[in-house]
Image 1 (cartoon, rainbow, N blue to C red):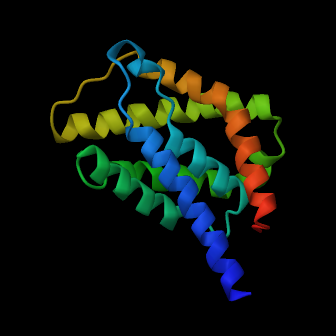
Image 2 (cartoon, rainbow, N blue to C red; image 1 turned 135 degrees about the horizontal axis):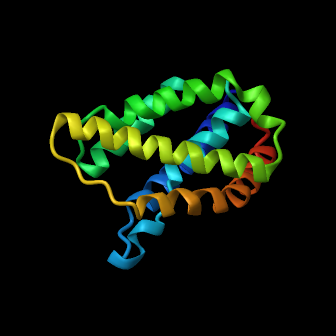
Length: 162
């Protein structure tokens, strides 16, 4: 049984690593605004699916790793993702019962709020730039949400994560 738990944890960590690689992979300048928030999507799924195991602590660690990989101020993404994970975990029963398309609309709103919050914190710390193109990435994240959800749900069921 213990080996099964380690395999399940490794699978969750691998999904976060794949999302991190996809998050920091460079895109061309004209498509930079279409970059979806892969880490937010994966974190959202795991907090919705198993909020008793993946919640604020994981969000904080993922945020710190995201800060380190981007070279941004340490703790900014960790703070925002922790607040995001808390809000999702506290409302996970309601959010789980929404249709995927309604969840997609909420993903767009959540990603916009996350990007604006990160911008505001970085603006208070030092000068920061915000591009309206980043809002297109939020829309693209919402469009990708049903497929990310179905892919991660298939993985979760295959590895019997509960």
